[in-house]
Image 1: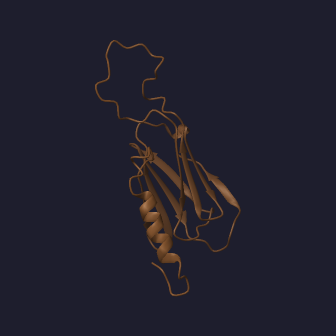
Image 2: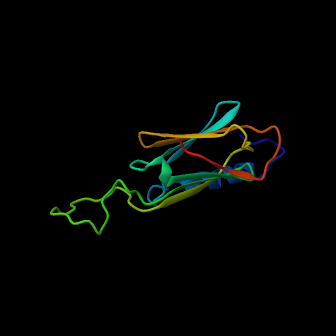
Image 3: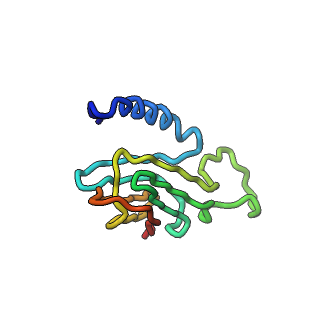
Length: 138
């Protein structure tokens, strides 16, 4: 939601929506950002990964970067197989996405969990600013 103090906020919101449209076509993973009043919750689909393959970093209280290394759970090109792929859509490569959060968050009290292919990052709203942090994924 934009306020009268931010005349460009609506333009930025439209631009963000346009750049997110078709992000799955660009090889990015889908995310949702929820605002529960006290914190922002980012939910990202990263199926077939292990928690150790996922890195979550918060910078400047507004930039959240989620990276996942190449999945070890899928077959690699070097593995021998007697079958041929008819359709191959599952991502086997490293993926990364940086999100600009709609408002400032604080690194203190942040948490990240990964269960059944879903990464959930909880980011409390701030009481003061910080330089950035890496958030461990459980």
